[in-house]
Length: 484
Image (tube, rainbow, N blue to C red):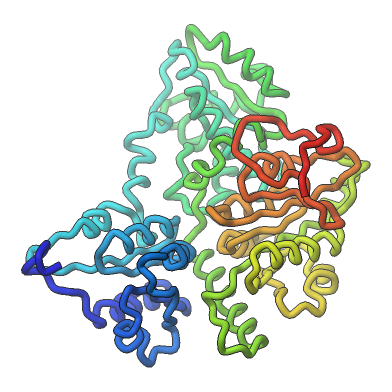
């Protein structure tokens, strides 16, 4: 530091403590700070000191830094002064609504880390990407007639709760992105996403009403979507492909999906890229983090083991979908089994064995009484989270998204939670109803790394999954594909 930046200051304990206190004030929630360092003695004496919210992590072994890096990666926010190791940890930990605080040595000194920090967004306000949503995105300009696919506007008939709306939004957006079309959804649909869970600054798709008004279409877009005679309605992806082979040579055309748009074949290759399209609201994430902090405190008190700290265990989000979905399952998958407590407990035990570390299971459900009696029960490592309010699901979703791993049986809400929580090293376990039944959730799990399909008895199908374009085939049909 003295050679590279001779007039720059060196980071002192004052910087680290100031950064910690700023984060606590900014986020308005309790925080646990986990410090890794190549000088543990100095760090323990000066950074950890007498603070009750600071813990010394890692092992100081610079020849074996993987565990230290993994600790930084797992955290929600990062504080570091300088150096590429800290930069790498912040890079791997970076996620929507996460903060990274970097040291300024002052005296005209500008480090590489400061260059990154001055150009990367945090959750304090609109990000550079937010401004690009309108200024540099052709979707927010008026479509020109007779420009082939650029003159095609695509939408969908959206139905259902938040999970269905999420996957309708992503599917329409991705279809437009892949094929060069113009996506729109009704204001009520976009409003649903923003009202219930997501940050409007990251919504890239314009509303149908906004585009119609901006381009002086006099209500044509709305009439086209609602009136089948004014637009091309597709009941399968094959019909969409056929229409795209003959794009309009003049005028504009309106396309709409009239089939369920969680199209696995299309979404799987872009699964992780799609995560940036929907960012949970800051206040929802803060409430979720506070809830997990309270759960971790309770868990540690129950363990009463001074050798275990918050850095020694991970969270598993569990979604239990019941209520109206039980009747829905009986109609769409009449031969398939319904997920029982046996599945959830088998999945928990598998994760405990696979990860070989303490785990805390946080369960959210639309049937809290049944879940309390059958899933939480007498287990000391399972906690009932959220509020179960289907009209206000944002916090439940944020809890699932904040966890390291996910267990869910079926339903687009659980799928959304697993989607938002997915990260390197994370697992998602999905239920297999068996009896030649293949759900959409199983299609995703068969093709995504870290995702597993499990029967009620705890048997896994598809052990090692890689991202590709294949359709899911049930192990009973595709003999020899499953492993332990």
